[in-house]
Length: 336
Image (tube, rainbow, N blue to C red; front, top):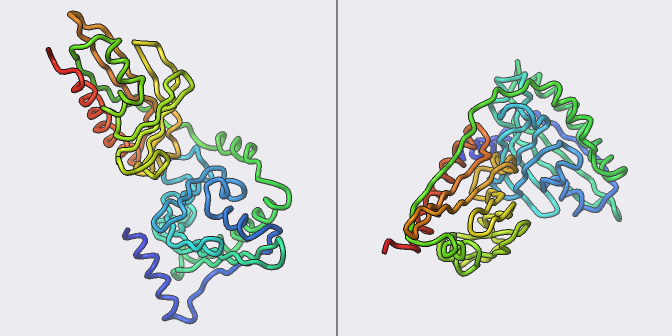
């Protein structure tokens, strides 16, 4: 939030300083306004011309993460941690921006970029990009000269995207992988919670494999296609429908009846955006094992966590969620 206030303050300062320096670039793009605006305001759009990896949430305070080198360490991938300031559908998006890593004193601060799109004849769009909020001297001058050329390249890529098709990033990504030192290996983080309940695996399986059963412990709103290759969708708010913001997406990887189910976990909007970009390996495995005397041990394990502060935040939240899920499931089968 402090970053947003700083960026807004920079914009307000423009009105008080008529000689405020800024970069202003224009381009004519052979595509309708709606298509060009979408290229700036969606993850897929950004990846079609600007960078090989992105998370864009076109709303005030939303993510505007642009990763030119997805293999680099967090904080060095490109425009890490940028935020959307304002959006006018079909007309404008503004966002915070930083400098390249080799200008660290400026990179630690934020400037503001405003991209406007307007019709310039049938099937053609004029794009106006303004980059403001510059300091003076030293690294600021270096960054200003860098972006004076860089934005020309970006707008050229935008024109080419609509003239020839989306950018093919495979060669670029190959170079980035070769140029990036392999990150040191860190121990695999594992979440595991378990409980022993007075019920057979067959009885507990019904609570896992039916929508009615899952709604008693997983979440008040559940959509379930319980089979290998199926899915489970949940929402913690009983007033919301599946698909509303906050929906948790789980794809079912494999099923062994009455023994095991593995879910591929997709992080939701409430989870850190940087972690959502890297959640492809995150899995939850639920196992049922006989514990004697008509009892069963329920073991819920989560694996596939990334590293870094954003993943630390996601890990802490999912630890509570995993523990609560096991506790609620176990509570359906009180001791006899």
